[in-house]
Amino acid sequence: MAGFAEPEQVAARHELGAELRQLREQAGLSGQGLADLLGWSQSKVSRIEQAKTLPSLDDVGTALAALGASDSTSARLLELAAVATSGSWRNSTGVGLTRRQQDFVALEGSAVEICHYNPVLLPGYMQTEDYARSVIRMAGAANEERAVEYRMARRSTMLREDGPQYRVTLPEAVLRWRPVPVDQMAEQLRKLAEYATLPNVELRLISLDREQSSFMQHPLMVFRYTSPDILRALVETTTQDHHITETAPTEQLLRNFEQLTSSALSLDDSLTLIRKVINTFADAS
View (cartoon, rainbow, N blue to C red):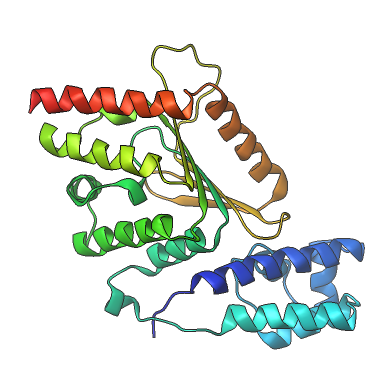
């Protein structure tokens, strides 16, 4: 049965990988060294630590024994492994989302903070249905309804009372790029202004009138999880998503995001700019 992990399962998988990597480093072992010790491939160790592969409980127990983990640590990590491998699973056909999209929803749902930059589009979780359908068609999605459901699922995460903290930075040009008629674009920006006032959303715009000192060509998301040691990044391109789990490059991408944000307007000025562009589209409709 095709399925996807619930948010708590994804969070547990990431935390488990990070904890196992920390234990390995404390033991003075390289990834290859641990692989040799366990009779595994180095790629298996790497994929478990980067949360790209879900290990069995037996694998986790074997690794913990080899790393000399204490009884309390072993019990805690085996519990994490149990959470990661159990829980409820839903049929992807039943909910109408692809497995990749489902996992993306879970990644967002399990984060405590999401830093998001997009140079072209409004974030999917802030898109109206009209806007979403238009860009989905442009992208040539095989199943339009699935893709729309995906965006609605992501929005429900943002609207949760206990939802992640969203830090969103967008160039002003994103407000003016119009994939729908002017009346629909005005409505889209009204919703954007509404979402910008949510307590868990910080939306900043990079004004075209300001000189810039940084740029990024591709959409970027950085996810922060409950443990301060867990930071993940996603760089999207037209044909492939790049999941980045290594500490140094992830922290560099977060610094890039912070640099972009540092040159953006304040929260209040960003909201004022959105309303100004709304009026432009409303007058043209």
